[in-house]
Amino acid sequence: MKFIVDLTMGKLVKWLRIAGYDTVFYNSVEVDRIIEIASKEGRIILTRNSNFIKRRKKTLEERGVQYLLLASEIVDMQLRDIAAHFMLNLKKNSFTICIDCNKPLTNISKEDVAGKVPEYVYQNYSEFVQCNSCGKIFWAGTHKKRMDDRIAAILEN
Image (cartoon, rainbow, N blue to C red; front, side, top):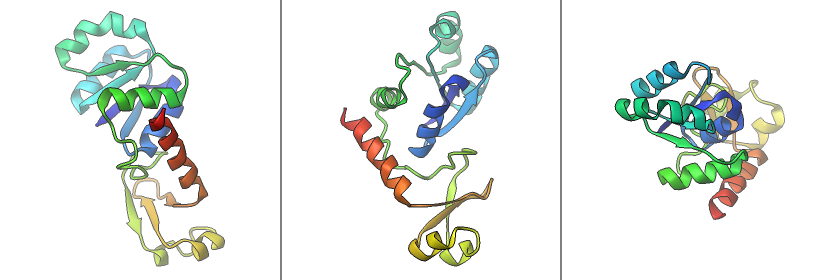
């Protein structure tokens, strides 16, 4: 499932990417372009802008573009609503997409990260993934546990 999200909801984009969902930003001023991208790429529009939906509902339906109007400003509630509406498993594919550039992460050997990560990380972790686009390297540090715990809490509520 792929999403397109208003620029004003940047935290939501980050968390959808953490959960493993291909998610891009859009500029809410370019309404027709948003619909075109969503239609062409099979993306679901996520927005808090009810006027956008009211003005373009017919066009969205004609183009077969799915959308979800989100009520909450709080990212945890937005994620919960999206997961419930689309029956998403926010844990299944987590940490498979780069949170910065939205490209897939691939496994990289410990030997290949030598000198590219802090020495402490190299000594204490054995599994690494890298974004083939931006080159950023990730590992399952304490931040991953906090993110996993947050997703679990979102799903429990």
